[in-house]
View 1 (tube, helix red, strand yellow):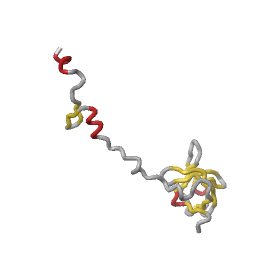
View 2: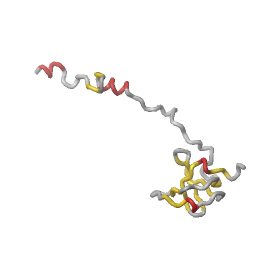
View 3: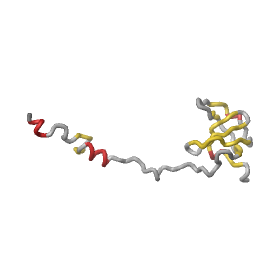
Length: 115
C-alpha cells in the first residue's frame, strides 16, 4: 500500500555510479555526432561516368556486385582505363574495367582527362 502512495514507477534508475531518472540520463548521455560533423566523400573527385585510370596494382580486387567476392589483383593491370559506375563510402569507387566491375580506393585512381 505504501508503494502505491509513493508513486510506483517514478523511482530513480541506477546507472553506474550515478542515480538519475531515465529521461535525464538519456538527455545527458546523448553523444551522437551531429550530421555536420560526419565527413562526406569528395563527390567531385571521379564522379559517376568519369573515365579513370588505375595508377597502382592492387593486391586483390573486390567485385562491385550484389554478392561481392575477392578476385586476384592481376585481373586489372596498372594503366588500364575504366568507367566509374558508383560512389562508395570511405573514398572508394565502383569501376567497370574490361574484365569486370571492382571496388577501388580513390587513391589508386586518376581521371583520364586530368594529366
